[in-house]
Amino acid sequence: MTAAPRAVIFGCAGLRLTAAEKRFLSDAQPWGAILFARNIDTPAQLRALTTDWRECLGRDLPILIDQEGGRVQRMGPPNWRDWLPALDQSLLARDPARAMYLRGRLMAADLRAVGIDVNCAPLADIARPETHAILRNRCYAETLEQVVLLGRAMADGLRDGGVLPVLKHMPGHGRATLDSHQDLPMVTACAETLRQQDFAAFAALSDLPLAMSAHIVFTAFDPAQPATTSAKMIRVIRDEIGFDGALMTDDLSMEALSGTLSTRARAALTAGCDLVLHCNGVLEQMQQVAEACPVLAGRARDRCDRALASRGPAMAVDLSELAAEYDTLLMEPQA
Image (cartoon, rainbow, N blue to C red; front, side, top):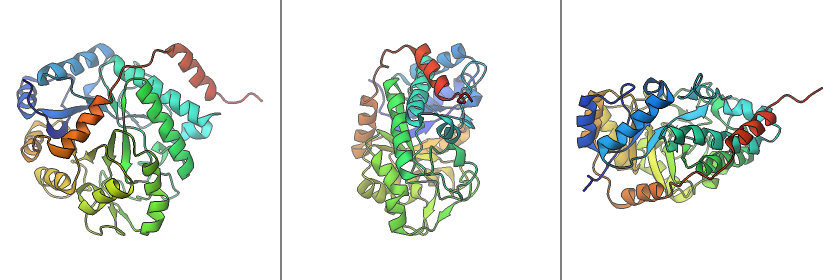
């Protein structure tokens, strides 16, 4: 019988799992894995790594990646397409929604070919003049309506390609003027403004199976804790935004959070996140996080099980035709 998974997603250090990593992962049994550029060389190597992960854990665990396009794409040239930043694509494309769907569908084909079945996209963060540069051109659009339209298109493209989408960064990162990798952003907008704009984008996409929290303080709701570790903000996500899928944290290693890694993990799970995400692949840190993460149980287990049950095969399509259509949508109009 396979061991029950823990409420954690881990990375790994390199292009293959080491013997020490295999021993640790087999015992820790994370719910899922996440891969980064340091783990990727060639399609054959990447397929071998994802196979190794699943054989090591003895189950068909979900394997995640941040393949947004633009600055955040872990798989790139020469083996994979070099994608435009999402906001640049949306401004250039003749049919932005169709182009975003095709982007998701073509990305999904690349991911499934190497054994990856979860992509940390779409973003429902609304781009604003003050949005920090680390995020701004990763956003899909500058209006609520367009963000929802394009976020849905991206999610549909991924799912039609057999890849689960992860909605991020809940409940909204667009007003942050600091980089949460380095600092803790504080959003001071009033509750009603947030409900009508930032939160509304996530509410419109709340049926998606997975989402990622934002390491951001929303002072109108909780002036002390970022959303990831705030029980008040998790209640907003569940009760007001209406998200009942599996909620994972953004990376625990980001400097927006304080305390030891085990403290961060416990705080996020106590607040109501279902899964914690630890990305850097440092084994000693992973051991600390694992000790703080219980086996998935109760409603968290139910939500994670529902997400995995929604994984499905890719719809049959002619990928070369879709790629040609995508390229045509992004061509400069003839004078």
